[in-house]
Each structure stands twice: as C-alpha cells, then as structure tokens.
Image (cartoon, rainbow, N blue to C red):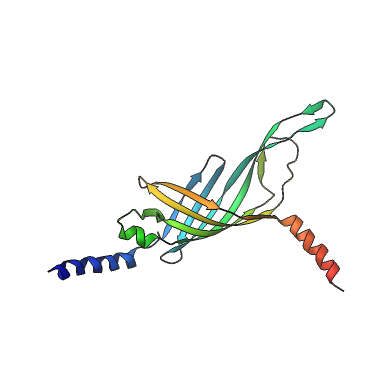
Length: 183
C-alpha cells in the first residue's frame, strides 16, 4: 500500500520538474531611484532567458571650479542613456517548484553576464557647461535573485563585479600599439 501511495507523488514531482520553465516573455518598467529602465525578458530555453534593457542611469558629481568671480562649488546631476543585454540562467526553478514556492515571472535565483553600452550622444545634466562623456562598455557577471509579489511587483537583488572600459581610450591605445608593432 505504501508503494502505491508514494509512486504517484514521485511521478508528479518528475512531471513538475519537466513542466517548469522561465516565462516566454516579460516586459516592464524598473527603477531603483537613480536608474529608470524599460526591459524585456525573452525565453531562450526552459532555464535561460535573454533580458534587454534601455533607459537612463543617473548620478551626482561635484563640479568645484574657479572662474573670474572666484571659487564656485556646485553639485551636478547627470542622467545617461544605457542599453544592456543580459543572458540569465535561472538555476533553481525546478527546486523552487518542487518545494511549491512561487516561480511566476521567473521568481528564482540566477547567474548572468550583463553587457552594458553607454553612448556619449545622449545625456541630461543640470550643469550648463558641456558635459564630457565617453562611449563606455561594461561586462558584469552577476549572481541575483528575483521574487514576484502581488502578481505585478518584482523585486530583484544582485551581487555583481564588473569591468568598465572607455571606448575612446581603448581605441586610441589599440591604434598606438598597432603603429609600434607594424614594421
């Protein structure tokens, strides 16, 4: 009798493991106060999705300068366009499903590699002087978790470490280096 009762439970768990998958597509708006992004996450496989984002990342900076009327300390604000692509592997969807935890809207832990492009042609600043910005790219490996509450509110928390490169300086370095190596 015990064998008959446990067999359907095991079969059901096997069925649930194969049926769980990341959502086919999710689109939305995300903010953390200084960053405002529109995003779309598209399923690639049952546990991998591709998240694309476009929006503005803002920051404050100090613009202490001397002019003909003397020292003028000021705090500046700049908001720059960011475009990002991020493949995500949701590695614990099946485990969360087996424990009857919420997996809606990709509520699971993930590992990703985020690639960000920040062009220099669109920025908003409160400083009247010309803001000196460069094209930048960044590659950021991330460990994160995503949880959905009330069907339409997603919370994400991530731990990341990455590298940011100024494209103008990198191109100048490559040109200089290639000129010295070519005979």
